[in-house]
Image (cartoon, rainbow, N blue to C red; front, side, top):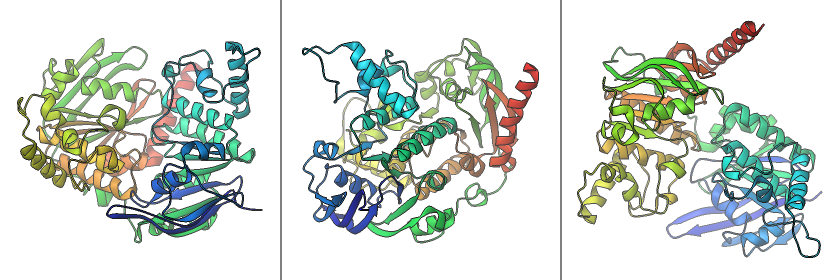
Length: 507
């Protein structure tokens, strides 16, 4: 049987960069095939070639044994290739049903298209995947996870042969990841091929049949996942063992925690938070974790001043008024780095310099006269301090990798002297070396006396970073662990203990 898709001797270069060199591999029909490599390995370029956004300088692509010469993304769609990117492509003002059939409306009788026909067609697509949505709901009301599932339903409606998923779990909680995996396995059962791109290596071994590794634009190898393990895959990706252990990242226990930076006193917020109290001190990193719906996201917004709780008090350096709004909190030294950096923290079409100096401007510290040469020099210094890999600070920030974008945001707040940092999922969508660099940056902030809060569902991340861990469930703090004791198993056990306690109370 011919491969579903085959890349043969693909070359692609850009000015000053050879993105791909002689890349050849194939993907079998109905396989879940992972594509991995560090940022800059060539994954994105290869996918853009496969979807008609770029043309290769040399080499060919075959679909089911037939050579494919793509001139545009539309031709790739017509050939049965669909991509689900990290950035969701949803028409927010249309209904769920309209989004599912968008681009392929059902045929209308007598030229008129009825809402009931759209709903019937959309429901048929959802039934095929075992999904359940309110078809009449505006798409803007959907969660991040549901938006992704909606895009999968739309892709299937286009009779997709190959669905490419680019970092599909970057913004999902563990329970949502399992739902996604069930849908992916359903696609496989129908014979639809999935090319799965992820930096979460444990996912590769859970979901993928085979894995292809790229490094520096070249093919390293393609192998069945059953023949590999995570350390071996890391060696293939980076050419050496990359250590991501607490002893390497955290640097040992210290007693340097100082005065209280943020005080949370009996805070309640609707059904999301209930009587939550804790302190975060200068010179410590507190991690907060919990399953979807546990209240962690709402707590992040309360800590950053983005939301004011109707009950309870949040103080910054003992001052309640500083935490009363996001502008006041920012002026008071509280930096908030949201998990969805591309939508909530970056101006993607503006330069790196504009983005790294954004807090400076927002807080009125740059005056009203623009001095490009001076500001570009400052931006370059800030980027150098954060080890941002950038050729020119005038280039659009969208051209940087996820890890470098995150370091730009950290540099933005360091520049204005912030000493309290609230991070949501700080390493979502970045590769392992970039994760380690960001981890070391966070620990350096702590070593310099900052108070750092990390809201994350990545339990390995929490174990590597935290001095203390708060485990949340149902809007309450289920328990507290010292960082060295917060192994993945210990955090999981604490969450389960809370569930069991709830069950006993219910009994």
